[in-house]
Length: 152
Image (cartoon, rainbow, N blue to C red; front, top):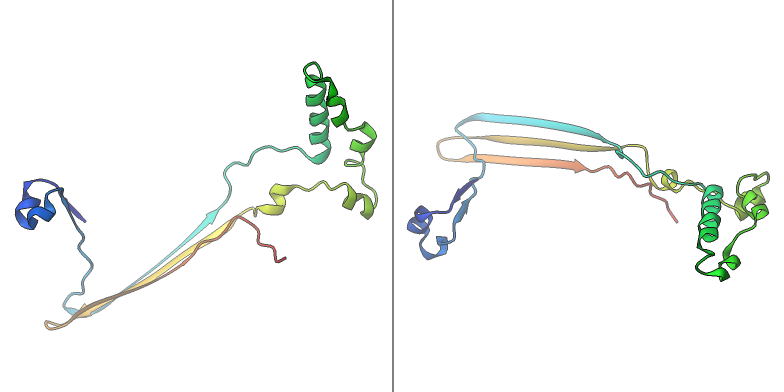
């Protein structure tokens, strides 16, 4: 890639090159026998840092604390306080029915994978004679996803 942005661009390309010219030179085959280049790259991705989170029990306790601190401003906030007996249901689940009624889901674990793989493979073939030159390239890319996929 070459960038021409001075008077030489205008001199060569006329008025169309007045604001500059970007020249892109593509790959070409060369005289001689076929040359084959193969490349492969694999990358392991992982989230660098995920935010800290609260489980359902701790989130409800924090919610109650926030409402208690807000009571000086709006006394009708008592209607939003959850009783401690209700909050305890999220911590002490003993039956399947309680786990369904009072879920405590780790959404980061449910939505994100720990790691994901990405692959890139390519092959280039070039060659030619004095009359004909050729260059062919093929590329395969698989981009791994950190999000889990669920079929609904």
